[in-house]
Length: 62
Image 1: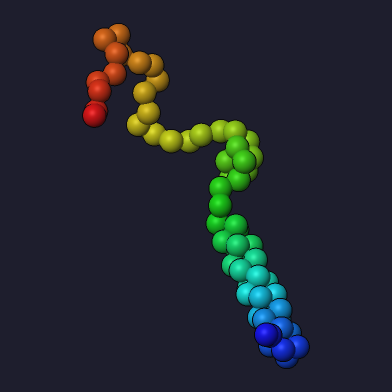
Image 2: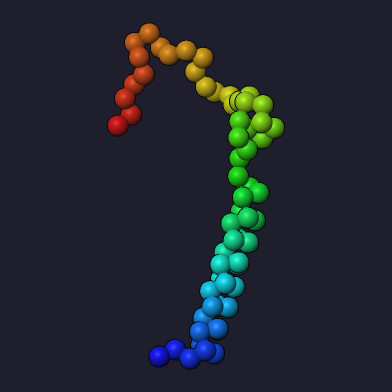
């Protein structure tokens, strides 16, 4: 049977682990992309992308 001291240690240990885990998730979220791009404009500045599909279709790669 668990004593009061062991129960408190388990409770505090669990709470500390959860708080540390939430801190890691919050710090990692700063590097995620924003909704609709970095400035939330919905503009994509990528090069080398097809403007339209070829008349004979795309080639299968698998």
